[in-house]
Length: 325
Image (tube, rainbow, N blue to C red):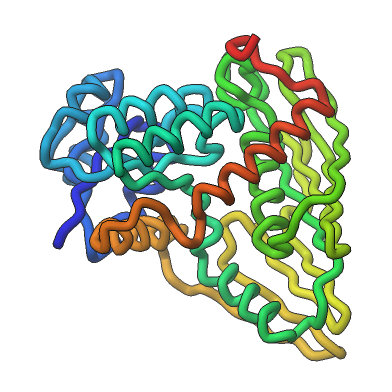
């Protein structure tokens, strides 16, 4: 069984996903849609995709499409995922799957009502280096995990019309990259949150330019998460246990994981040439083949919890988007 995909949006992230899809053996990209006919045609030509559409709805009415990868800006995710589900298409939607948990509640109920597969594209959870890190944790290599420190920051384009700094596009550090730190923390501790405290600098365009988040879990685990669109940070996750630590450079797109215990060091390196979007795409195809409606790796409840934490942070730092008022 071959799963046929449609790509909704032809921007930077769509290019990354589609390029990696060349390594996916159990599916094919059948179509791409953009609001610009020339853009969708160029995209289709570049990746040898059979069909290109200048209308999202037109692609969603294509009976050959099984599942759609949504690669549009954050503020459009709810609208576009709703369109997909209402037209009978399963959905893999880029993170954050919605701007807030209220939107996600509506979408998750719609997916359930339509009996369609629905998943947030937290590709990090499927990366081999992350899976190796979790294996080390589960087998007790670093003892009991106590703390996680995460940093992710770069000097971004903060032009008020650009995606990162535009409040109308749900810009800012938190939803763009801070979500990765929260997602890693949730993966590692998988526990009820006892307390969350956060601070941020809101810039002239009304989005958070940089932030710091502290999370305390019920069983004692703690996470410190920093993200920035105006500073080059260390860009790593460090997991501290009672017997050692794990360092994951560029954790959100991890190719390497380093285990350090009692002066000894183990290095895991994923040498595959792809960025890693292929792993989540392959997994989605497998789930669709089995008739599953959600992923056991990124289940609906996990995405809902992450969004609820993002909501709490936004409330604490005073981050509200114009279209939410």
